[in-house]
Amino acid sequence: MLIGEYEHSLDAKGRLIMPAKIREDIGEKFIITKGLDGCLFGFSQNEWTNFEEKLKTLPLTNKNARDFVRFFLSGAIECEIDKQGRFLIASNLREYANMEKEAVIIGVGTRIEIWNKDKWKKYNSEENISADEIAENMTMLGI
Amino acid sequence: MLIGEYEHSLDAKGRLIMPAKIREDIGEKFIITKGLDGCLFGFSQNEWTNFEEKLKTLPLTNKNARDFVRFFLSGAIECEIDKQGRFLIASNLREYANMEKEAVIIGVGTRIEIWNKDKWKKYNSEENISADEIAENMTMLGI
DNA sequence: AACAAAGTGCTTATCGGTGAATATGAACAT
DNA sequence: ATGTTCATATTCACCGATAAGCACTTTGTT
Image (cartoon, rainbow over all chains, first blue to last red; front, top):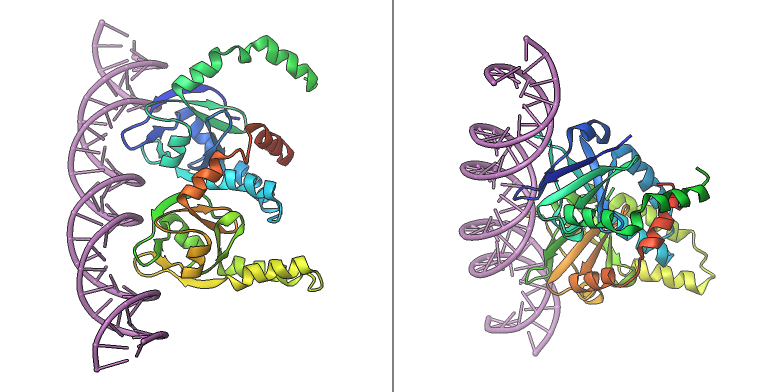
């Protein structure tokens, strides 16, 4: 189970440290893709192959399906954690998520998310994340 | 599994580098053909025969189906990757996809797609996909 | 035969990715 | 407080992938 929030910084070549506590769970090789709200998603191999299998079944003839598959697969890349615990974030993904220097990695259960630090702070300070409100919405989901 | 997004440029003779990370999966010889949404499709030998099989099952009696099959088969050409990792895009296909200089190759699971860079950027900036839609689809697929 | 156009192959320079070495800092035990 | 260990940050050097230019070969046309 992926949890926690970790701050780290990219080096000159766009590499980022994978927090020690997450390394085990995510595996030595894992996949990152474009995510929602301007962050990047990171999946373990297991979670990812699961997802791929489902994408494969979508029909080529349906435009919506094509768009969806293109978004995730073209945005995806396999990463490997090097001996020093770092991994490279491909330049197009760095661009997509506005990663320059300071980054935040958070664990969200089945995946991790990688954020530009400022964006993450801002996202948290906005009132859209009042805990009360979230709690209220949860009741609808039956929790 | 073909994934990722790679930018490269055609040389004066219409050759394009096959990204190193894709070369293995697609094979030394592969097939490209006209694709949907104004790009070119590229298949490994295996995926191509797979695709052909599917086309074969379409009913000859249906005009739509006949058009569909003609579209893909008439445009198809076998390509070979040279010692320097490049392949030639036939002139009729270059014309079809408006390939001049800058190109983008993306992996989409069972195939690659080759886009004119500007066209690809434009495609991405259009709201083909909204975050909500993606989120919705993700839940449906159980991610 | 002469020429143009298209395809193929080679060479070189540059840049990004990769690995190693070292420095910094936090956590913990003595 | 001191030293030890582990995790993270930073810098540097090297290597391979790619871009670009050029030359040669093949093919087709006049």
